[in-house]
Image (cartoon, rainbow, N blue to C red; front, side, top):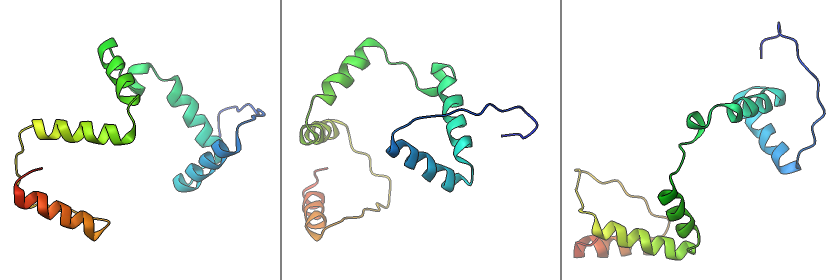
Length: 115
């Protein structure tokens, strides 16, 4: 924030977790807590299209329906969708796995030709 502009001092009451997040952002950005909170207000005050695209009614209802699903149901729905979309290979594939079992399952599926 430029120092040649007048500033207003305010008192702000916010939840501790929000304050911790603001402080982490300030440290990461090398800025003050005031700068972080000022930027948050500036960005929130931007016109809606600059922040997030507006959803039409059909997309909003689809999002609501998807959010009613459990995480497992969402993964299963995503896998069904992936099976319906044609697969295009783009040369080398780089894949990482957290567990050996995940790798073996991927290897089994890859050998069978399924996604």
